[in-house]
Image (cartoon, rainbow over all chains, first blue to last red; front, side, top):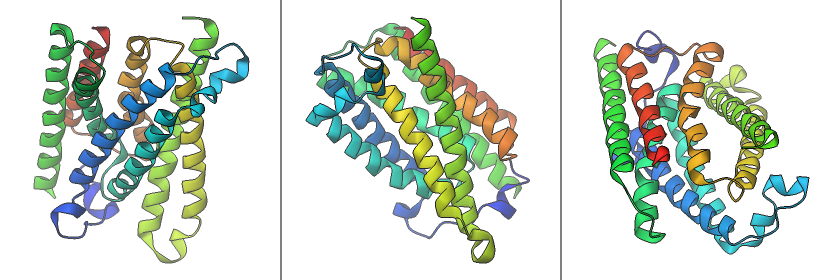
Length: 143
Length: 114
């Protein structure tokens, strides 16, 4: 990766808000919110009998689904911005942070239980994200 | 999980990987500026179209399958994207990057297994 970074990727504007990693973090938070809203919307829909219903159109009848879509669209802006400055593979792997916030949000808002396995999984994801962060730091050192 | 469900899951994952690669292509092209930047909006539109297909299929899967059945596929998607980015965008990760991707996927699998 480090042999490609300087030539292919531009530098972001100064300021914390324009940091592509912060934008990924915001994307992750909004996506987690979107997933939970979509789940609530999907659970409130009932018709799943025809082949067409695989397209998830019935779920569009719920306001929760539309709120979820709104959160998804909002997260998209931050994602496109981050893609200008970061390699796709790395940026996408960082969005795994969603799986830290979805269980926590599901626990807070949907009353789902976080067991030992789930808690352990969250810790493994955090370890993975720390490794990814280190890989970026090392790559930028070499530039 | 039925055959149809598998098929829908596979198509949705393909749409996701293709969509993200198009989005990245579009944003990189836009950065070049001038002549080279032309056409980035069309590429972005293709990416958004692919993401819309992924989104609608995913939405359709949600009420049919438990989230715990769906999440493993969500879990391996970073690995698929890294492989796709290596093949089509010539991105390279160092060993820490690979280890990080594998660990996060593993973590997602654990979260969804519970």
